Length: 103
Image 1 (tube, rainbow, N blue to C red):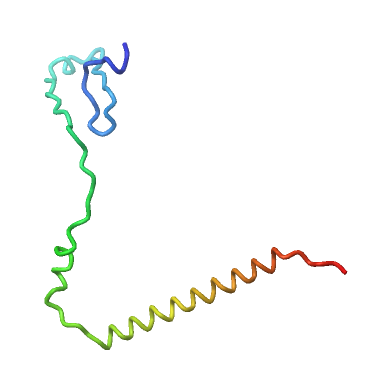
Image 2 (cartoon, rainbow, N blue to C red):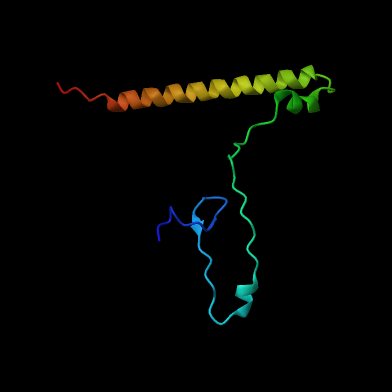
């Protein structure tokens, strides 16, 4: 029997068809009612919450300029260190690629 034409129950996650097989020697398997399958029309993708809803938590807070200035200085210092490290790495790669010229 083809999987495409099988009228059985479908997995809600992967949409593959499931076969209901009776277990031999188990009389309870024949008395289990079959629940109706509700088809999933479309899968909704996760979306982040609205920005206004996220920022509403911070709406009543006062701005601490000392902490903000210190934080900005730390970020600036970190970016400058990263730029310097990247420049050194590029220079080292450039010199490593350069073949030594023999006389």
